[in-house]
Image (tube, rainbow, N blue to C red; front, side, top):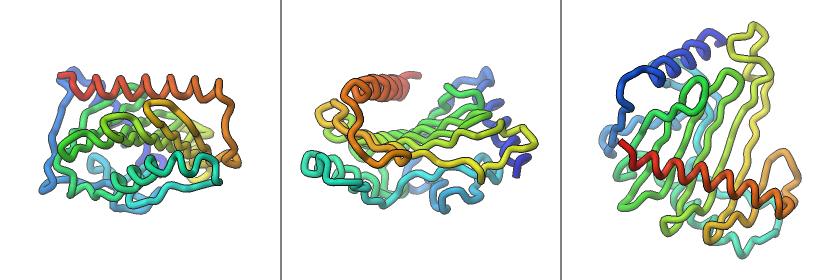
Length: 218
């Protein structure tokens, strides 16, 4: 398994650091390759190599940890469930682009039905792996789901074991472009301090804006 993971990361890094022009492919519903058909954390084909990858959310209902802002977040959760229930074959277009911001490369996917509704980003590194999903409502950011693993040892280390690393999940809720609530599976679901939310809002919106610009770049 160690060799498989190392081969996958090396292959991605080599492909994304080449001098070739970044590829952009519009994938219509007749020829979509859905890498998320498998169960989370099992062997999946990526670039022809068997490896373990974090699975995107599909056909899920958002978790309500408590009644905090329950009514305020109702529209956000309804919109998330609608978008999240669309299978890959039912998107009119999926644009995929190499996204090289981490040491071992990554990929960003833009999902559209008449208009852009979802963006996913996968980043791979020697010491971590991260998946981020952005959900739009009326062309504005509405919900963000982040999932990542911080490896205790680098993937090339002999002591590396993915099974020993815990998956962290974080959910961020936006209303009118403002971050109003955030939940992390490492805490009890209680509200974060307002200053912390402001910093997180700035981080997430900056990352989202960068992805929108990247979509429109050559």
